[in-house]
Length: 96
Image 1 (tube, rainbow, N blue to C red):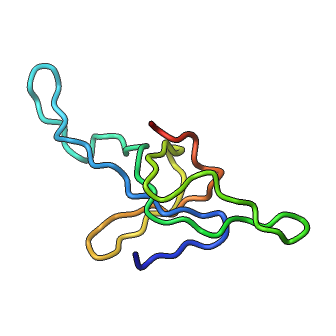
Image 2: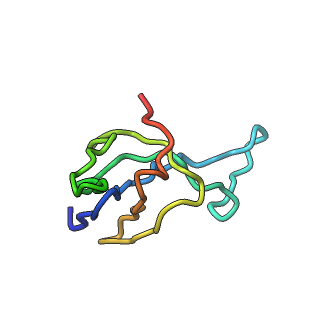
């Protein structure tokens, strides 16, 4: 991975959704679809620091599937792959 997040940031690869169709069989174009909100954690930062300067451990680890806020993060395209760089506070849940 060429991206190494800093502080309490994580790099997430959004899941690719299969081609969406309506019940009648019409294909929904990509421009009309909502962005996915589930992705896989690819890299994590070392964690934020508390008031004493000690690192606060991250609640997620590489490989976890996570649910994140709809409009959170910064989109990054690297080698034709798309990633999101999110703060740990933008993560809502780990999906089991």
